[in-house]
Length: 209
Image (cartoon, rainbow, N blue to C red; front, side, top):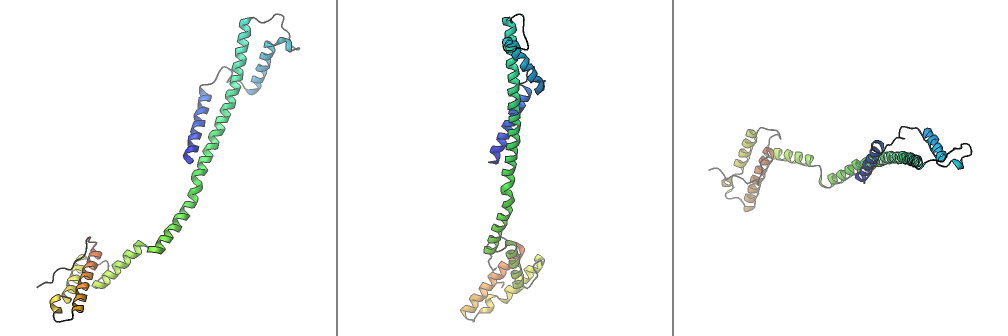
């Protein structure tokens, strides 16, 4: 709708520019009062019998009559040009205001709707930044390091944790304990990958001999 109002405003502006530049005639420089006086004089010249205050001794010749009629028509055309020019300017201003309000009206409520939608989304799934930071804190706690520890420290902590859960040390234990140790090794590798931002599925490296 805003674009429609803008196009209409441009159309009215173009019409006003055309009327103001290309449709002028010899009467365009006259004021409204001067046009009234000229129109009255032309009417008296064309119809001398209808005006008792002014009498002509001789009737007009055909060429003079045509010139007076042409002047009268150009005067009326100038009046119409001024009317259409004023209408075009008024339409341009009106449609410009309509385009402005059509643009600014919905935008005032858009931030509220967006904020409400974001609030519902965060309530449903949580803030991604907070979730990411929580996962890093958990991974760092699992490895026994700080979240901003250097990569060398994280790798050393991983190797130490993996050695404690070496499958060769689990020989003779129950199968459930062995499975738990393998799952912990995978969790430790995932924690290392999360802290180091490594893509791909985490897999525990083979135990060192």
